[in-house]
Image (cartoon, rainbow, N blue to C red):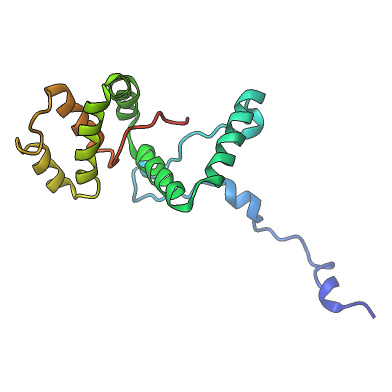
Length: 165
């Protein structure tokens, strides 16, 4: 005698409810939130990438998986900060801050990195107090203070890394 559980659904009428795949397509709209609060960024499907882009994605993923957990967590935290930036802020980092950083001599980079390490986990108000404290920025040029301010709001403790987009 066949197992009743295995065949119990064979004579059921089709369910009028949508299946899971269909519900996954529907966005989870909340009428109490503005659309920007839940709109996800456009995604490029892996299969639509060029072979070179696919290879780069796979290589980046392999490198990420081979990192020590603490380093992987740091990169994920940086990615979350980057994801929260507006397109204008990202453009400013890419076009203004990163090129300046790359052109800085090592001693000026170290001076900024040292201060970023102090500011990294501070709340916003304390970070702003330090950034406006002449003793904290003593010996820094106006340009270096601007770079320090820009990087401090990214909550990084070291050099900015080019975005992997």
